[in-house]
Image (cartoon, rainbow, N blue to C red):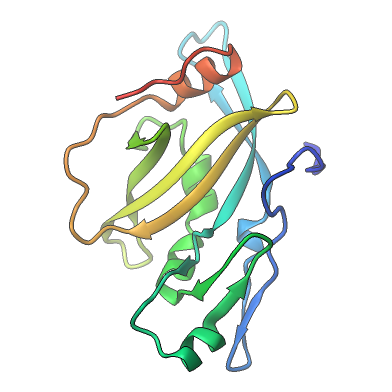
Length: 185
């Protein structure tokens, strides 16, 4: 697969690492990459969807009003369009994101509506083997005739997720590819 991400006009394709107290936090796992999904609903005629995947700043940063100005300065992560406080919990969870995104086509991956034309995944297994509510908000669109998936934000949901409406990722992909309206709740 080509590693050419020149078509990505609006998002960071290679994140710079963050350093705090001489410790480097590697963000390369959130660099743009291709993911291929195969819909084998009809075994004699499988359909392949290739997406360029990008990740947003909110996957590893968080607004935090309870930090002092010194802490905010030390934790400040500057991206092209905004700056926010680096968040260790979100950073650690962000390491799961590439695998989560790769699993979107699997039946066991729960995709739901997140409002405003966005979608989300809400259950993941953390490094200790515990199932947690992890709200991974993403959007899909076409950019220069290529399918794009952008993860806008990802964060733990401690108060639960409430009522959800499931949606098939392949319905999303098929509608996007065929210029049809994306599923809505």
